[in-house]
Structure formats: structure tokens, C-alpha cells
Image: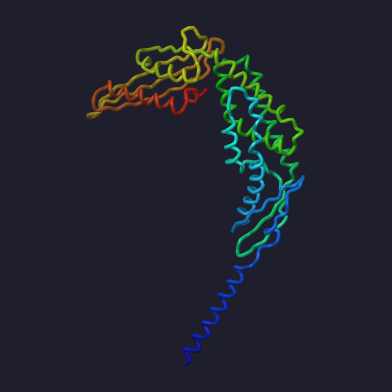
Length: 323
């Protein structure tokens, strides 16, 4: 009888505990979570939740950035200024996938609450601060483009074009994102004017293509086997390979052939120098190319050519020689 009474007592406590837990889990959300305030002319509101406060804040910031990201789609017509290069699809994808990189350096947490063990955060962001952050970043990027434009006449055309194309590819997505945010927050900012350095940079790159040339000089028989690969690589970059160009690639190599057990090993240390008649040595590097074959040295040598072809296809010649 005592055991039955104890069982009934424990069951009642357990049921009460379950009921209490269920009530806690059914705790209603605050009104500001159910009905967040609307954004106004000066403020964005962001709402985030997580079981961790820092993650909840990040989610609230992402909420604000997503509002900007969604608004940016359709505002990229400005890229049509960059004649000859179609960035439209890439920029739109970039804006959708990288809204988390939108600059939000200042914000204020206005509400927090813990409901059902989950933390909710509401913050507000001043639109003027976002505008200033993006103006600052765009100004800094424009300074890079302007500085490179100023050096165009004093640098080898190949070097200048390579660096200009690299600057364009690395910064155009961010440039358009900053410009589109500025355009959305302040339509009177004349965003087209802010993109002039990039338009000029791209036009100069396109204008130089017809004049890009390079001579390839091999100093020994062993380095000649890489000339065709280099010619093909340069042609794909719209660089003409001629015998009377002021800029040239100089190839030389040191070959080691050994046989270890049943393997024929062919090691070619290939030296590539990029020089200009006006500027002297511009860049150089050594590539160690290895080939092993069970057949003979000729087969092992072919493997070193295959290795070199993969290297310049995957890495880019200018990065290989550390331009």
C-alpha cells in the first residue's frame, strides 16, 4: 500500500513538472518580435534570434544587410558604363550572396528578450551611417584606380594591363555594391560620377590590347620545349608573340637525368625572366619540374611538359613569375 501511495505521489510531481515545462515552452513572443517596427526614412530595423546572444546579434545585422541586398537587385544598370565588359550577371549574384559583407559599423540594440530558451534581439541602424561607410570604402577603391591610371605611361603595357585587369576583377563587385547602396540611400549622389575612374581604367585596358606583344627567347635546347606552351598561353590573353618586341620572356634551364632502380627521373629547373628594354628585369622565378617514367628519359621529359602546361593553366604565368 505504501509503495502504491509513493508511486501516485511521484506521478503527480512528474505530471506537474511536465505541465510547468510545457507552459514555459509555450511562453508567448513579445509584441515587438511578432510585429517589428517598420523602417523609416532614417532607420533600418533588424531582428534576429538564436540560443546565443552574439549569434542573435549577427542574425539581426544580417536582416538589415538582406534588406539592402534585396533592394540592390535591379539597381546595377550603372555597370553599363563599363563598355566592353559585361558584369551584370556577376554583380547581381555577388549582391545576393555577399550581403553579409555590407558595411554596418554602427548599430544600437533596442530590444532583447529570452523566450523558450531562445534569445531575440532587435537593433536599429542609422541609414546615414551606412551611407558614410559606403562612401568611405568607395572613395578608397577609387583612389587605387586613379593611382594606377596615373602610372600608365611609366609602366610596361603588359605589366600595367595585368595589374589593371587584376584590380578590376578583384574590386568591381565591391565597387558596384557600394555604389548601388549609395544610390539607394541617396539618389541625388550622382553615382555615375563616382564610377568614372573604373570606366577610364576599363577603357584603357581595352585600348591597350591591340598593342600587347612579347618576345620569347630560349637560351638552351632544353628550355625550347616550353616555348609552344607559353605561346598558347599568351595568345589566350590576347598577347602577340613576335620577334621584335621590347618586352620578352627569357628561358633557361638546368636538367638532371637519373635512373633509380627501374625509374627514369627527369628534373628540369626552368628559369623564367620577364624583361623590358626600357625597365630592365621586371620579374623572374624558377620552376622545378619533375617527371618519372618506367620507359625512358624521353617519356619522363614529356611528363615535365605536361606538368608545366597544368601549372600555367591553373595558376597564370604572371603569378608564376611573381609579377
